[in-house]
Image 1: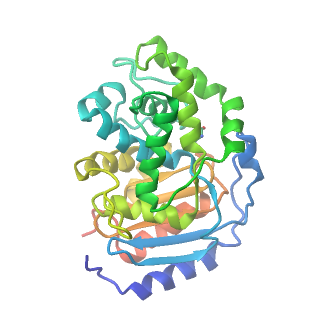
Image 2 (image 1 turned 45 degrees about the vertical axis):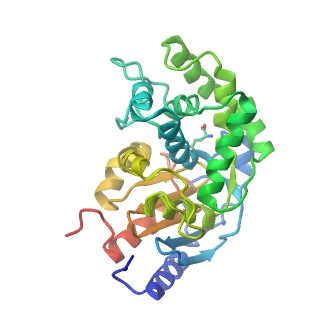
Image 3 (image 1 turned 180 degrees about the horizontal axis):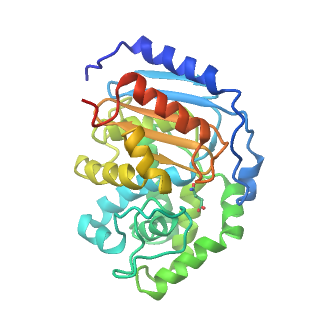
Length: 312
Ligand SMILES: NC(=O)CC[C@H](N)C(=O)O
């Protein structure tokens, strides 16, 4: 895919932005999951992987951290492959909430969780993953992540246990959805799988490769593996665009104009369809749970390279 700017310009731009924002100490590390509170607030990386497989990075691009909510995007893709569009849509809506990512709300009319990018919708999505038992479902999920990342990755046990023992809000949502018959009785199995997907270890470069895979019609641009069927890319990017930044999604769409997803460990992925994947990692979060430096970097990158989808 031909870019409208030189690859060298990307490296220069991310280095400049890294330098510009590296000392910005605004925001706070998520501490409602005790393991996340141990992160270093100075960690900061920006990575770009183009649809033709060129990689650019700056900062702590090899630093491992848990993927958290960014996992929701990829598990949604797997649920679509496992169950098809109609079945997934019957369980999880595609409507932005305007509420916090961990709000305990369901759509009153349909009783579905609003969308797969907030916790309730993500738990319902995870409950749709196929497999004979908990182990097979986890292994299928890990195999899916491996296709996007291009190498094996693992679940961070301390974070998984930390979420499992403190995730009462998520448990409450699961019970509410069970009450309305939106998920089946195996809620402990679904919750464990959800906590496991959030505890997957990645680095910033991995996230950029995953985003680039979505940009490249589901094909990992480095090893050419088809990570997800191309027919579901449209669904995945649509919900990322409208719901990926939670209750900041509207302003994000207006300013940056690209499908994106954030997570409470400070990761942020952005997809520039058919062109590139962008990832930023910086654990200091704003009050909506989005990375402060991540949002600033993406606003500037979008503007600098004219990446907004509706740029004329
Ligand atoms: N926004 C997030 O990254 C939230 C994920 C986190 N594991 C939770 O369930 O609360």
